[in-house]
Image (cartoon, rainbow, N blue to C red; front, side, top):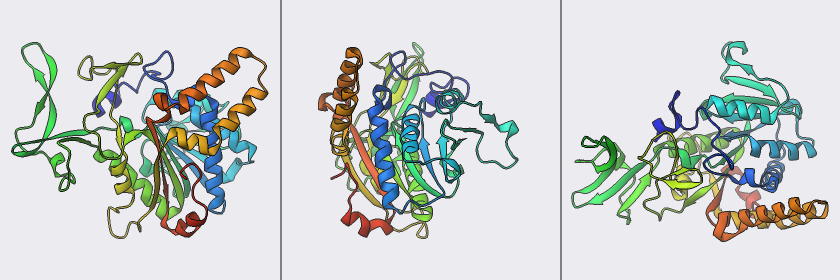
Length: 370
């Protein structure tokens, strides 16, 4: 899965624009500005709840085309959030998508790694349309140590998974093998236990499940930063609370695609196990790493967006709209984002906070989650 998606020369994400109507799938920020605007307002509200600490950064993991960040920065500018006290950090491994994000977010060509100061952790930097520094990083571990608003929208669903099944002899891993008769790929079951079978399976009632160690490591890294440096995390993705089994699939031209056919030409994805992310966020890698962080959610996208005001925002946009086609598109986008049969129930929201905010959150719970 990692090789197919992020191989430096032939990886699915590395050399093309895979988003939107002309790509293989569409994301919420691409559907309507309302999505990004409401996320931005939520982030400003929670940052204010923390005392508006500066300097601070917003760090997005897997920013796609940069559409969500562009909407967020536009709203931040309305709150006079820009300049030297605020910066944008993008964790992006695709050189092609980094170029797309650069054009989306700022008027100037970014400085590449050959022109950056020696010892820089980032590989590219630019200035946004609103005057904030924008920097690109390969790994979450490279991000500056400061108060951070973490954002991960449709990021974890693309991280590699292991598929495990329970057989008479115990847990075994589903692997991919080459059928020598016709040179096609096929699923097989490991003869013995693999390292992935050491996952937390003592009280597992399912007969089949998917685990993503990389997702747990990144969540723990994010949680450690939130505890040590201050910050908040918001994870948005399609997923479940530890009850689903077989969700691994491919997408091509907005349709399901066999993940073993023509690898590298289709997106590979699996539903996010939010129960596992919450476990990782509240269990340190070492005893000294952090105290138990706080998690809120998950809640369905329709509930979150409704609670933070998407209906009111739609009314405002329609009131100022003079084009009937634009008005129809706004209503259609609202329906797609909130309808339970569309994205409204498929996507979930999860928030992470440092434990020091427990008393504040008891009095002022995070909007969208209650």
